[in-house]
Structures are given as C-alpha cells and as structure tokens.
Length: 312
Ligand code: UDP
Image (cartoon, rainbow, N blue to C red; front, side):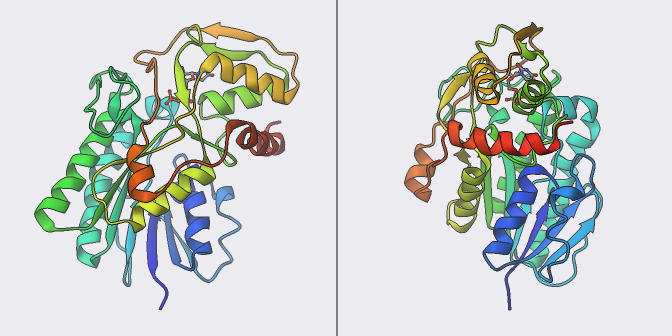
C-alpha cells in the first residue's frame, strides 16, 4: 500500500512542486485547490497519473477525503501582497477556518499535519537575521495584517492541536521562494522584474530599492519542506536561502541576465513593506541537515527560461 498525502494549494506555485516531489517519492497524492490563485496548468502533467487525484474544493468549507491519509500539507492561501490585498477575507478564512478543518481531518485520520507558515510572522523585523525564537513585529490592522495574522493564528492552532490532541505537527516558515510556475501577474518582485525586462519595459522598484530580501530557489525549498515533514521536530523551522540582497541589486541582476536596455523606475514603497529579511537557518542545518544548494545565478537562469515561455 502506498502512503497517501493530501496537499492543499496543489495548483499553486509551491503546492504543484510539492505534488511533483511526493509523486517522485512514490506517494499517492490527493491535490486540493479552489483555483482562486492556483492554475490547472501547473498540474496538468499530473492529471493522467493513477497516483494523482485532484479535488476542486475550498478548504475553508468542511473537508471530506475518503480513505486513509498519512500526511496533510496545508499550503493553500493567497500568498503575494497584491493577492491578499485583493482577497483579504478569503486569506483570513483559508488560514483560520481552513486550518481548523484540516487539523480536524488530521485528527480523524491520524495523519501527520504540516502548515506552510511564513517569514511574514516576523513582520517588519527588529531582529536581523530572523531566527525562530524571534516573535516578530507585525501590524495586525495594516494591509499585510490579514495574511500575517492568519499565519500566526495558524501556528497557534497547530500548536494547540499538537499539545491538546497529541497530533503530529510540523511548521515550516517559508522565506521568499522563486522559480518556474510563479504567476506572472502576482505582483511579486521577481515575476514583475522578469516580465518587465522581457517585454522591454522599465522595472518598477518600490521605495529606493534598499530594502532586502533573501531568495530561495523552489527545488531547495521543496527539499527543506520534505526533510522537515519527515523529521521528528514539531517546532517552527525557517526554510530559505540566507543570501541577502537589496531589491535594487536584484533588479539590476535581472536586467543583466535578460540583456535588457530597460531602466529602473522608482514607485512608492507599499505600507508596512519589511525593510530587511534574512532567514537564520541554523536549525534547518543542524536538525534537518539541510541547506540551499542553488545560487541565484543558476536559479535565475531556470526562472528566466520559464518566464520566456509565458510572458507575452
Ligand atoms: N517590489 C518592487 N517592485 C515590484 C514588486 C515588489 O520593488 O514590482 C518590492 C517590494 O516592495 C518588496 C520586495 O520587492 O520590498 C519583495 O516583494 P515581493 O512582493 O516579492 O515579496 P515580499 O517579500 O514583500 O512578500
């Protein structure tokens, strides 16, 4: 009998790469998505497989899955600042009601449960780099509050089910991740920069571009998530690439790689945009034996090849 895993957000960027990984590892995969921000094109290659099943469902409603489940990975959520500005209520519901439904399912099926948490739980951090012990600096009523607080609630609820019901749980705090299958129009920096450079448009740098991020290639991210799920560690673990860079420098890297004549054009910095972000991955290294392997120059080449196929 194959082990069975339920992955929510299966048609999304990270969810679809996770489905690929679990299929490759010999699992039977049940992918669930309401297609609010996910796209069937991300998983169409999996649809003919006997070991892949797709359920079109919104997990903030009661979730029914027939048969046994060994693992549940809750990766459904609008995940870019533009998306959760447009869909604030759905963002809060999938993180709160959705997490509650899936924890209930994990309890009923005696499945191990993992949630996709985020570096956004650290908010605009006052500690740098961010280790798992830092509690964060989050504005609950700002534009990012719907996402950040849903994710913080999700962590709290997951710990409550672990402590009260003895459910096996894992919490991954995902830092900025990029690669093929990112949506061109999700408003994130990298899809924006790649598509603008390919089209010969100016690159929209928000603020003065001195804010930093640390970008992790999707294959590394998926590997870290898989290792954490299979570990016996139930407290939060940061998974991300500690190689920190300013947004302006990233824009210049994209221009150079694309060979574009475009310029940078500066726009207003969005409210509560974190000024710095860099994961401390000491825990991932020591507990999981994981560290990222793909540097930006290599990851950007794969990403550019993908964006060239989808940008009009
Ligand atoms: N950003 C930018 N230009 C864009 C989109 C984003 O300069 O067209 C900036 C954004 O303000 C932030 C950084 O790039 O400082 C990373 O943004 P992203 O949306 O990728 O993710 P975040 O880390 O903010 O969730």
